[in-house]
Length: 554
Image (spheres, one colour):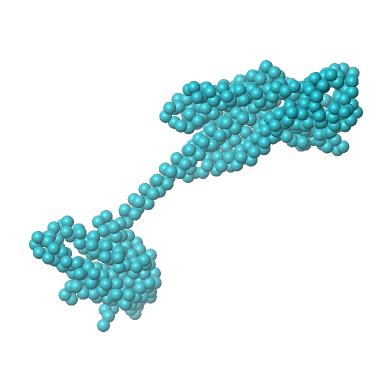
């Protein structure tokens, strides 16, 4: 608990420092501009005329105010998040620079951070700052006031703001889009069965990617800035809606369902009821309160399995982190207005990271289970086609092999002579050892293209692919010699093992594996009738009229 509190304290301190970065540097705030004969703070506003028009804002400051920043080789003027088609800045009539296509403006700027260098050589006793804004429909500052600061402080501002409104979202958007595709595929795949929450995670991540545009610098918006603003801000609440559905689908915590569905009217009503930037902002306390309550309900839902489920612990900590970041946005905006950097992006990224952990853990658990089931099914199938004593294929599987064969092959039927007498005299245990011994010798002598099986009792079968009678007879002779060299010593005396083998060769001009096996069985019967311990071979031929038969070799 202490470590969690310590981590939250460090994160909270970092959040506060980042959010209030403008208030941690020495600066001059330019808030009193003359505009159309009155005083103006250059805050965001709408104008009825949607044609591109110029607006000039002027203010003055004394040289002492600038020098109070310290003697520097240069000073910097910082303009952050100016809504406009384009704007340019002059200091004592000297053009410091411009942002946007000032000569041919189109669209709107969004999230632009610009620093203009002020050379101390242009300083006068009274200094005039002039900002000319080209805009249509709406313009003005949407976050911090225009400030003048020293070079070192401006570098700090640039570092923090570039990280927040540049690098993080630019990296996050393609990652989120990739995750959207992955979650969609995993959730919709009928073979994965990851649950409904994975399907809900997909639109949640997509809405998060849309919301990331709130932090990206865009130099030309193709749509009105207020419309864009409503889209990207509504996306974060829709993302919370789908997150809530996913958490409820996983934990079935009723308050989560209630607060999740409450987010829909919270998104829809402000969208339809707001006709201006200010009206839309007026809904923020309610919208953020419902969102924060929903996030807290996620933590409470997962907390019920906190001790038993690692994924629940991840979601609880991620929810607390999201509340910390999103809550800091709400608190600091209430305390300081819009003089803060929005940090909701980090809360979203914390939740997304937790989702990755949860979904990947679900996926790998399911994959491990599926792999285990496949391995078990393969093992069960293997056992179903094997003879448990000899580990050769069983009778049924050898029949399946024969039914699918075409072309040239040989079938050998092997029977142990006088095996019953051996079994009765020496016992079943020794008889089982003899069967395993014969099976082992068959495996040693058979080639890769030979199937071996136990036909039943003391009978064995071998199917040699692409083999004629000479090859089958050589295999049979080698097998017979090896097996009959075995001498069994028992209390009742020494016993030898003798085998009879029947061979049937399928030459490819007839069809029917069962007929070939029957011919091999008939050849085995003939070998045993000839005095046992013999090898008899037949060839399958096609007789007149189309019937297949067997012919005993001369």
